[in-house]
Image 1 (tube, chains in turn purple, blue, yellow, red):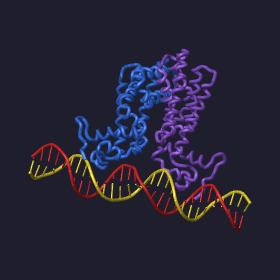
Image 2 (image 1 turned 135 degrees about the horizontal axis):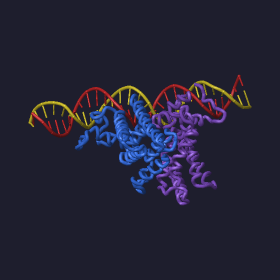
Image 3 (image 1 turned 30 degrees about the vertical axis):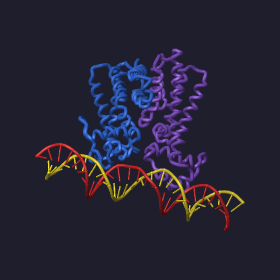
Image 4 (image 1 turned 60 degrees about the vertical axis):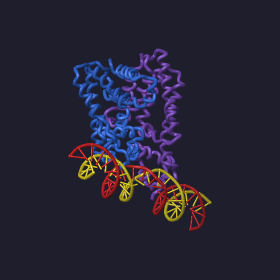
Length: 196
Length: 196
DNA sequence: TTTCAAAACTAATAAGTGTTAGTTTTGCCA
DNA sequence: TGGCAAAACTAACACTTATTAGTTTTGAAA
């Protein structure tokens, strides 16, 4: 059949990855088969293996790319010379934007990391825990500086991350509400709940 | 082999269902096989079909039981003669307790409803949307009564539900923090973010 | 002890899984 | 136009899946 035609700025593997993200998101990793993916690419399943290593490798690429982006942003924010609440606000806003702009990728990373084979599964969890720990430290700093109420910092981080993650379920209402409105509302509710 | 021995207050189907909850939670619905479930029951796979209709039916039972419990509680709260913020607090507390006490069931319902076959898939989503809509109406009432800040009520509901749902990820920290502490912290952060 | 339904068993089916081997086609560069 | 690697193809493998059919075992009531 027709070959996988290469776009300007993306290799064939990247094109497969893009389809994989969509497929894993809509069907879930387990129920998404290489034959489904091949069909989306207009090709037979074994042909995919000229470009990729395995199905698992696709999931790894998706999950670790997202993880790296979150960690990278936190590095930048931590280095800022600003108040804690400003930093927390930046983190919240980054999460919200990532959720709204790279919806499918974030969704797959959030839901399907469980299917990562070892040692990637452990590695991913480890990165996640480390990220959370750094946020906890940030909140603790805010409490010590009396910018934040004396709340349990673990609970605060959980609440922040979970609330933002919930934007997953919100895509269906996209029409009735702008991204800016969502961002403003969530920042207000989440940050006001923390600040003294 | 040995028969499935019936406990005092539970039919054999209920016993299978209990094992299914655990299995679906740990392996995910797709990767949980009837052979796994049979092994957990100490029986061969086909024997299960003397007690249940299908694998899908197990998932349906789990998801709709949970949905009914949430709807039932909201019915009760709505009927109360109390302030809106009291009602919202009751809803938040119910969600948190459900999450902490029926962790596995709630987890499965939250994660695996996607695998429900039609028409159950549509029905479940419909019930979910209806539930959210009723919460939105509650928040709107609070804003109209000037108990709450003039926040976007959809965003507020999303934030509440998502934050509570995030308790999923918190079980690993169970040791370091009591249920009461979690409940207090979350109620404070979430409700204070709303109240005028 | 006989009876009989409930519930276990074995065997089998048809479909789907990721992936490899080996072969043919494609399409660019000389 | 001839050569050659990239990338498609077909065929196949070794599993696993949910489920059905048909048969045997179990264990309580008569």
